[in-house]
Image (cartoon, rainbow, N blue to C red; front, side, top):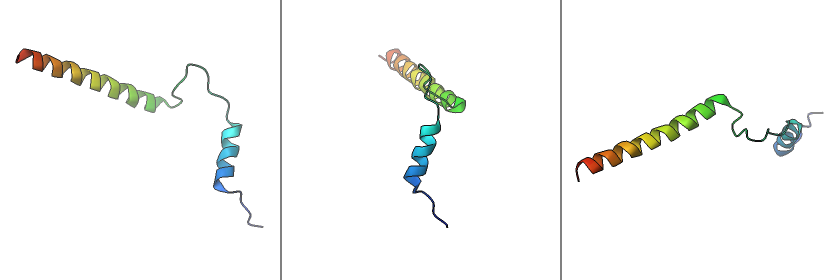
Length: 58
C-alpha cells in the first residue's frame, strides 16, 4: 500500500529517462557555466598580476 522504490532505483529511473548529452556540451546549467568561467578568468588574472608584481621588484 505505501510501497516506494528505494532511492537508488528512483534516481536510476530518472537518469534513464533523460536524453543523452549533446557532444561538445559540457554544462547543461547556464549559471554554473558562468561561475566556472568567471573563476577561471579570475585565477588567470591573479596569476598575471602576481607575476607582474614580482617582476617589478626584481
